[in-house]
Length: 419
Image 1 (cartoon, rainbow, N blue to C red):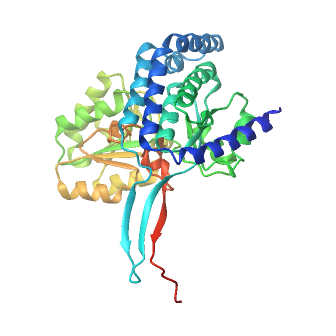
Image 2: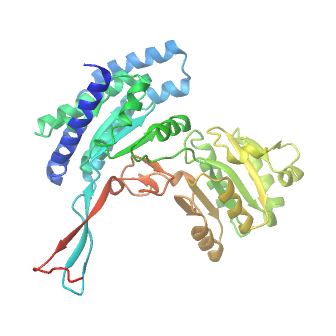
């Protein structure tokens, strides 16, 4: 069987499995999820053996230590995978939830109820734990899933997927609900993206290059998140100690992630007092600062920020700093250079906070809190399958509800349309 026939059969099997999954009740899905978690823990040794194959290949290819760290299935990561599956099992099941009901003048009772999307293809890089996260979220929301991980984690992903499929079979659920592409060739992805008759949604997780390639080639709707150029605006009424704590957390805790701070905006009324304090704290943490002309006038040693810096997702200990004339200019800057990901204002002015929340059109907007909270688990979703910076059909961190859609249900008593 050639590659295209194999992938086509896989997609057809996933579509058929999606019909069976849509009929499963919460109890059966939760039992399967808990069995998956047990399977991950019981097979920890074999998972680490398979993972070692990927790690040796990564070292041979000369991949960075940061990437190798992301590939590694340590005991801590394996335990976290199992815990994550258990947490999803404990979440409310969105499928079958009646969102609202209303009665029409002709006595028709109309409602909207949540249903699964169908088949979701997830294309991702590096972290093998995404295999478990994605599969369990799709199962809980009643969706079949087709997984295509990066070639650098091929053996690890295959091993995790097989454990999950075994758990499904043991619970009497079709193992075709979880499919893993067995070929690492990029052409396999491009063919998969043509199968609009069998796949309902594509979610790419990884770098901007991967996501743009998927969006360019897909005939299927794609949840996109190109990059996270996240901003914090320190308003003139901000508490300096609070602002410093939030900024350090947002920039330094994990600079390589999409919800890390990339541009700091400071109100001109406080810049002379706050900027030196903040620069000192950031430089102590090893952060390189690139400033606008007004910032460099106050602190000449700062590196000059270029126009492209305001668009840049550094994913590193580098920060752009701009002094703004006020809230209006800060919001304008975010509108011009932002990526619709996450923005925060530090202020004690209620009106300014409300205006920031209303006028900044990013997927997560915060007041007096770190951008690092832009995460499904941190926002109470239990887990997330990714972050969307598009507005159809989801915006922001995507949990179980975002893996469903709604259909209309109508109860009648013999009504017919008169016109």
